[in-house]
Length: 509
Image (cartoon, rainbow, N blue to C red; front, side, top):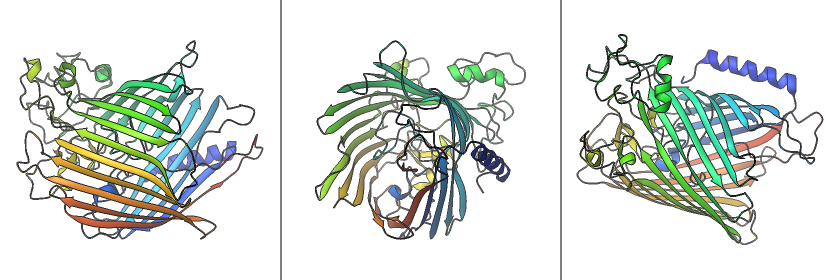
C-alpha cells in the first residue's frame, strides 16, 4: 500500500482524541461506489487532476470513503474562535487490473487567527487560475497524489492592517517528503513557498492579483547518478543547506569535504528549482464575474532573462453570480484556456549567453531523473506527460517525455431542469515531445469529457454520477470510457450547544 499503516494509525488516534475532547464540530462524511468501463487505457479526462487516485488501467470497481471536520463558521453574532482545529481522512480503493488502496488525504490542522498549521496529506492546488474547469495550474494541479508535508500558511486572502481592506495577502511555507518506491533518487525533500497579493476590497467591482510560488526538490541519494552530477551518489541533504534551498542561492559550503562541489549544479544552486509567477484580475459585470489570469513559468534562468515569455497558461473564466436559475438550461460557468510550453527559452543552452540559455526542459532535471512527478504522476499540469502515458510508438524518454505542448481548452458547467448538474471539458493539443527527444510528427490529441449528476431518492438521498470520456489522436492510445457511481454525503456529531443553525457544506469538490 502507498501509505504507512503505523503512521495512519497514529494520526487516526490523534483525531479521535481531539473529537472526544472537544466535540464542537460538525463532522462530514462521503461514501461513493462506482465503476469504470473503458475500451482501452483510462481516458485522459477521467484520470487527470484526480489527485493520482485513478490508474491508467480502468478499475472494475472503486470505493471512496472520507470524513472531515472543518473550522467552525461565523455564527449569527459574528463570533469565530481565535483558535480552532480540523481534520480530514479520505481512503480510495480500486479493484481491477491494478488493485490499490490509497490515502489521498490524511491530515490534522489548527488555526490561530489568520494563520494555519497542518501536517499530513491534503488536496490542494497552487496558483491563480479557475479551480473548477481548468486544465490545471502549471506547477501544482492536483494531478498527483498529495505529497505529505508540514505547512504554515495564511490560507485565505487576509487584509493587511491599516489598509482598510484594500491590500490582502495569502501565502504558505512548507516542507515535504518525496516517495522512495520506484524512484531513482530516494530520500528527496520538497521545499515549497508562495506569496500572493490582492489589490481591492471584496466589494469592489475590479480586483487585481499577483504573486509567485517556489518549489524545490532537494536532498536524497541514488545509485544511478554519475560523478558529473553528484558526489558518490549523494546530494546535499543536511539542514545547514536549507537556507540556500529556500533562497535559491549558491552552495554556501564549497569546501565541505562531505559533499564535493559539482560544476553547474551545487555551484549554481542546491536542488531543482521551479515554479510560476502569476497575474490575474476579476471584474463584476452585472450578473457575471469575469476572471482573467496568466501564469509565467520558470524552471531555469529563461524567465529571468525574458527568453521564454511565450510560454504560459492563459485563462478566461466567466461565472454566473446567480446561485440558481429558473430556465431549463442555466449556464453557471464557462472557461477557456490556452497553454503553451514550446519555447523554453529556445533550443540552445549557452551558459555565458543570457539570450541563449534555453532548453529549460520543463519538469525534468539532470539530478532528479524522475522529474516533477510523485508516484509516476505529473505534479503540475497533466498535459506535460510522463512516458508511461503516451503511445509506445513515440520516442521514449524517462521522466517527462512530452513537455513542449500547445493546448486549447474549452469547458462549461450548467444546470438542466433545475436538477441535473452537467459539465464538459474539450481539449485539443499539439505535442512536440522535448528538445532532447522530439516528436517529429507533432502528434495531435483530442480529449473530451461529459459528466452529469442528479439527486435520487435512495438510501435517504444520494447523487447518481455519470461520465463519458473520449481520447482520439496520436499522443495517447485511442479510448472510450465512462464512470458510473452513487455518492452519499452527510453529517454526524452535531454541536452539543450550537450558537446558530449551520447549513450543510459540500465536503469534497
